[in-house]
Length: 566
Image 1 (cartoon, one colour):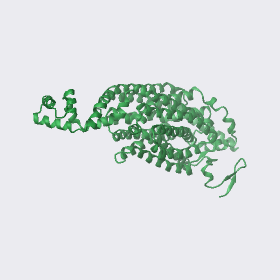
Image 2: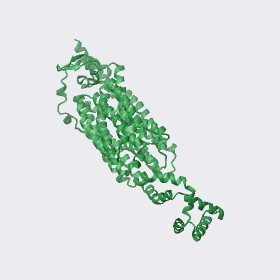
Image 3: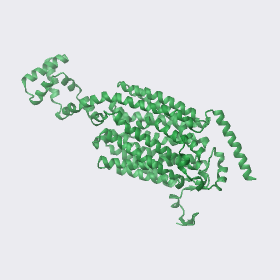
Image 4: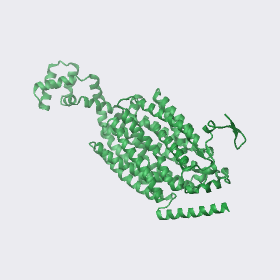
């Protein structure tokens, strides 16, 4: 291995080893290399969110394994989001330290945690601590990855690029839904889902370790409207004082257009984070779907969302506007969330109906979100393009704080979930298994049942029970005796479980439906609040005016390049 001197005169390793830490590009990359880096960033984001969300696919199993209450499980997520909020602030240092190493080596840590630590956590406290550590790293990468996407994507292609970046959480959720729904049946242990996820994460870490690069500060600290600005950006880079542009970063970013729009998207996404963490629990406990069926509904939601993100990003770039898409997507999201909320009062709602509802909801969320991500980075650039990571750190902190507060409120709104989560699946399984026996038990007087439980040969109790069965179910004496023998054959432990927890689950199910409906209306309120704050963001409403701005920019670029060559 040879060595070279860096700009400070220090000796640094040369060759491939140096590339594992020194990742800066001094020239704006060609289209192929730029797309390669964007692809690695998207892959890193996908696997990170897959790791972060994997617990949601087996939430009921984890709760049962560690004997957690539903509020305890929820507060694991709350603490994770709080930790992620403050690590997002730390990630604002990416404007000074760079972004690529944060992503590459962060993936190494999350992969190890997911593959080895979380599936082997000895108790619920250890599990909660490990989730918090994972969330800390996630909060950092949440800022670093969109900053890299912004660096490698000019404004006129920003919505498409951010649409692909937004595939991270969406495709991460889709990967989780597809893999879990197809493996839970023959790999029932919940730990297996973490092992699969962690192994994939370490593979992507290796790709990022050797392949991920970033722009030098002099290049990334400039505003780049189109790819044709490349020559001008490189010429300007020679005279940029990076340290001067980074002074007072928080003072430059804490303005209504940045803080307000970050808060807007945070409350808009309450429905999204609820879907990630609790759709599986919701569909299994309220509508009686199996774990595989509940996860397969996620296949539709995330797949449709992913496709819509790409399409709307391309269309937004073609029309050169963001705000009309945000308004349209928000209005559609409000409508579809209301439709979804009303289904809670219709337990007979079919799987196919839910596919249509959540697919349309996913499309509307995507129509709003991909253009918002593009507009937000453009809003930050309007303040100072050298502080992109700092602006994204503000966004990351606000999003995580809002999610922590809102999800923390969930157990107070949906207060009857614990019996459903802890005992609902077992009660449903036993109720289905002993459906006919339970129907017979219901027509027998409780006092008679108690007597038979103590003395199965009590003649008077037997005679009374047979008479009650014959009368209520309109059967002859022989059939009644056969039904009573079937009841006697039910294991006492199963019968005791149903008698103890069945009423609790039944009462909780009746109460929880109304509570969940209240929560969905909270989500609707967040989506509605998003709309007025769109007006503080950068960008045109009219495609014609946006096109005129782009043409004027091209004219100024040509003029400045001509002056440089004179």
